Image 1 (cartoon, rainbow, N blue to C red):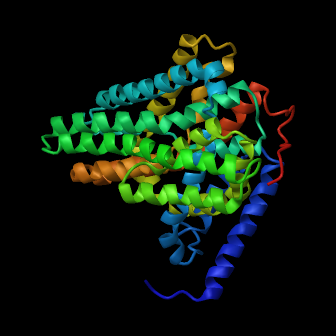
Image 2: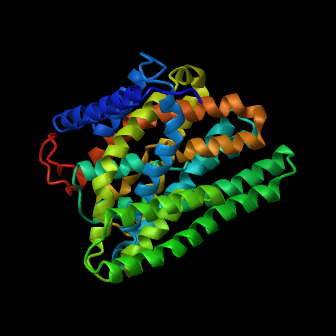
Length: 403
């Protein structure tokens, strides 16, 4: 790796944090969430447009991604407490399962009708249900949204990774069988290990963390303790090749349910560190998007976008009816779960290892649709939160908490 002058690193990160501050200020007075503003700015300063970022940022982006998403996963775990699940468990399970299945079904049938090969349709149907948790969580925090709809949405996003990985593993095996690949059993084993191993790791680290918070630091937690265990969990997950988001989420769930004293303070320590890292994450995520992917997608990519939207709307409608949720906002909750980055891109890279002949097609569709969903998704999440009446907003001007 080429040596980078220290002043270049300091100026780069200093400038990125200032950009994040400006995006936060603009987001307070416009309908655009700061997530969308950061991603758009990242595209602008990235190699696709102005190419202002030094090369070292591309090398640091995977590490920042792991840290940011591990924090997101840990914070999502606090929404899966015994009390919340007992009062809202059925809506979370019903809507999440229905959205996943209907999105995959709409995608598969739609792509087949467009003449897409069977194995490629299965791969894209396996990737489509995945939701990017970071934009959804950030919009709820920016809007300071609190209430049953918000808790249900965050609960769904929390379990979405587990359902998505399970479905992806199964459909990738089916695609391998139809495609004539001989590694179907290995693919299924890897997918099951990624889920079960992540849950086991979260349990192994979560219980000691809950004990430390309850006994060594009764009533409070230190940032060093919380951040150290979250990073340890993410690092071990990468080493064991399991889902670091899912393992961090399980750890957060254990802490939320088994910490005896002031469990909310554990998560507050992470929240104070979360936003600066998310600024870097969203800016570099935008910079990593290639605009030329939009032009390579064409009709097939447009179909992927439309089929995914239709699947999420129909899935949330059926799931809300099944769970007997009152309120139209639950029927349209799928619109709040459109962000589509990170996990889907990882799935696409894994699928390419098994189907290298579809590499250009898969990457063009997933990267192209990611740009669209990352730009429109946070705005729709914001709109649904406002419609739920849980943001204390009567106008389009934000009144969020200060980070």
